[in-house]
Amino acid sequence: MAEQNQKSKPSQEALIQLLDEQAKTQHSKNAIFFFFVFGVIFFLVKGQSLFSLGTLLFFVVGMFLASILSIPGYLIKVFISKKINERQATILSSFYWLFEIAYDFVVTYILFTIYLRLVG
Image (cartoon, rainbow, N blue to C red):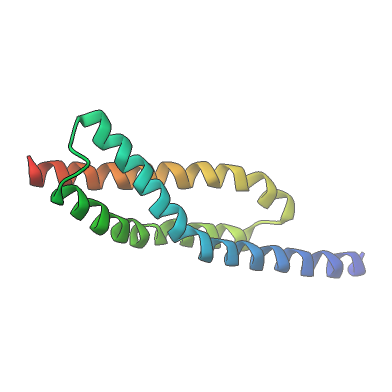
């Protein structure tokens, strides 16, 4: 029994390390990608011009802010990954992906609303 626990321990530690590395490399890229996608959708829905200096400024500043604002999502993923086992991580990975998309959507919506108030 003790040998089985020792064998599962490195597996769990390897999983935690894998999730940590994946979160570090992907959280910023995903945030920027979804910011761009959701931003374009918001601009098209609201009928705003995609080719203006204000739009360019929105996307340049917004991608930077979206990258910074994705850090809490990364911290949540790291915190959760340290508290769960391999089976739970497999189940939770799909839910975390949905959480990340929803979080990026909310961040983009807030930044877009601020942009509309500044421009409008």
